[in-house]
Image 1 (cartoon, helix red, strand yellow):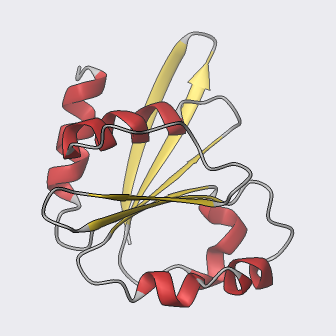
Image 2 (cartoon, one colour):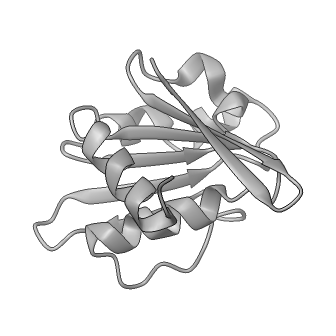
Length: 132
């Protein structure tokens, strides 16, 4: 069984071609914790948690590549994602994109991405991966 840093590192390796990872799971399941570990591995020093109210947090790697962390929990519909420039964000070259609550923008997701589904039973978390 992998610990959190090993899991985060493996996910980054697995998704390095498309650089788009969506995280599904109930509130409090651990999506933001896993993303925080992935950001740490990538070298982000100023991670403040999920962008629940701002919708997106942007970080830059030392080489200038962007990391975009979206939290769509508060979105009422897909139109709101388009209003914040979702299409333009998807065009960013060499960007890592991490999306919490991808089911809120299901019709706007790219054709290829890694879906990480986190299920929690009491104190135990289960991670299920699907590639699209």
